[in-house]
Image (tube, rainbow, N blue to C red; front, side, top):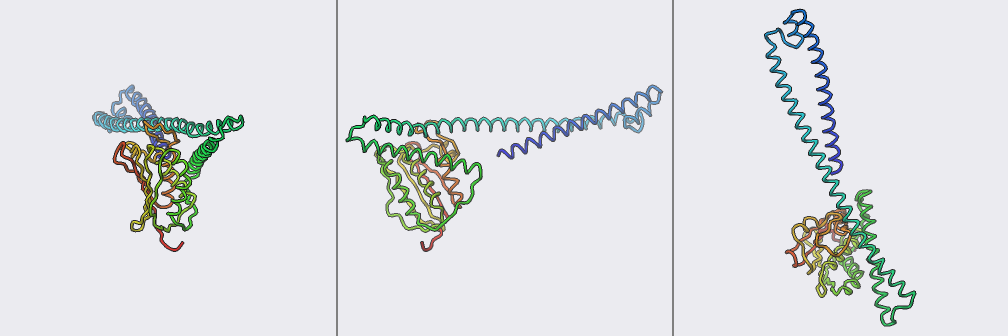
Length: 328
């Protein structure tokens, strides 16, 4: 979008410069013609003055005037259209810059919350351990909380670094190898079980079928981690996050469904937009998780879609990947 806006602005600027150059040259030429016509008139030669102005004789001057009037009107209209288009292009660029600034501000706010909160928790834990303020019976629970915050911090940094790589170098196709998507799901669930339990949420993936696929294992873990983390983040205590896996024709279909706050039409439309977070979101986050999910899934030749029955009715993220069955 940035390149197209720059190209359009350059074209409109070049067109305006060309029009200004043309009108300047035309006016200089007309000034010369008027000067020659004045010389003929001073000598009493009306026909010579008419020829200097581009007419065959003095009787044709009215026709020449009409021709010039039409030319001025047409060129003036073109000039006006170009100026209007240039104004629209400037407005579009300014609005885009405003959106980028707003995205930047949202990103900074989300990143600050996402990174400073676990750091503050870990710092408090370490200070308590150093000063011996932790009761022995609560030490394990506090240490587990610190490990969860460290994991959260690492995940946030992974998202930031991965997003920076995607934006700076473009989405390069990751190295793929054969593997079982069901095993990938179980691995991701195991890595997030402690956090889900701390939030009072259960992660379920019942009877996952073996689905052989060619994928990048680490990229798939990042996809699954972000989907599960997002579901846990927006789910109420005591609810369940369900993961299902199935084959549909030539696709492997992975769905992560939660019983959380749900999504309205605005949230569904912007779910995968980088740095976007809902107006009522009080959960922090950088707004990069689902964006990375989309980019990584597309790099595998797949698609991801968000769906929800409405606010308060949960939501689902459905990933479709080309299924390449075979021996593992």
